[in-house]
Length: 308
Image 1 (cartoon, rainbow, N blue to C red):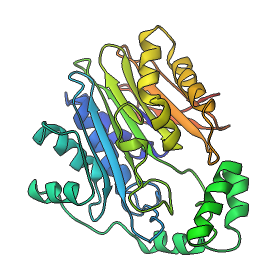
Image 2: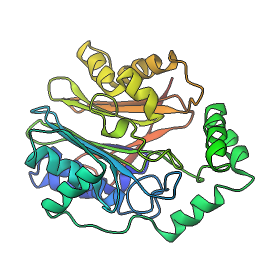
Image 3: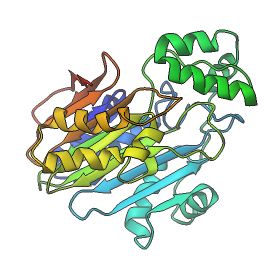
Image 4: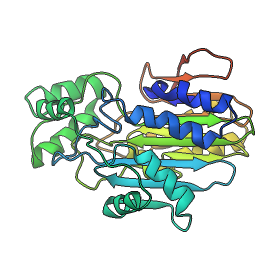
């Protein structure tokens, strides 16, 4: 199994399922559920930072490499585990793939997925503090001019906003099971202070998530609008199909995003896992990492991403 930053929280649980003969789909869902439950992670699930109006909206997707069936949800409120709603869409509503907003919430109620509070007091406080005068300075120091412009646009609607310190962004978990099947799960609360209803790449198959047993699995984090415009996850798998090594496949896909004009440019990252267990990752940001755990490991290992 491999995971983006902070996804290591769930790797041990996912690997335990794989060791006992569980499927890759079960493993990635179990791993992401633990990430979503981690209140210290302010970019996924419970404790995610709210949108511009102070509401936590969550997106998630899951994809099976054996069948290329998938499920996704977006702009979900009031449910701590959007990954489980996405899994239910895949398994129990196969005539559809993506549900959003009230429709996704209605379906979750119908299939018995538990509701719960997603906005924690710590996340609320971070959201409020982000409106202070240091917001633009912190954005510039941590993420560059694209983030500054994003904050300036937010100022036009509300006030200056700064990012939470520490690792941030969407979480990806990818798994290969004993039967040779791949699966990918993606979960996020999206950009903090985003315009209500904004959906990034995490819920978009081909952009933030793509999985095909023949060639590999890939997922993305970071500036989702760029990943959507470049179909980045699908591009990674296409590069694997053409024979590229995993890290190179990720870098090649990210290079396509670099060619797109974007006044709000921010880091974009990709990682991938092949049917024979090779893995790799790349980022437009220096010092980015991902985590790896095999059936023989007692714990996960941290690997560096290739810098684009």
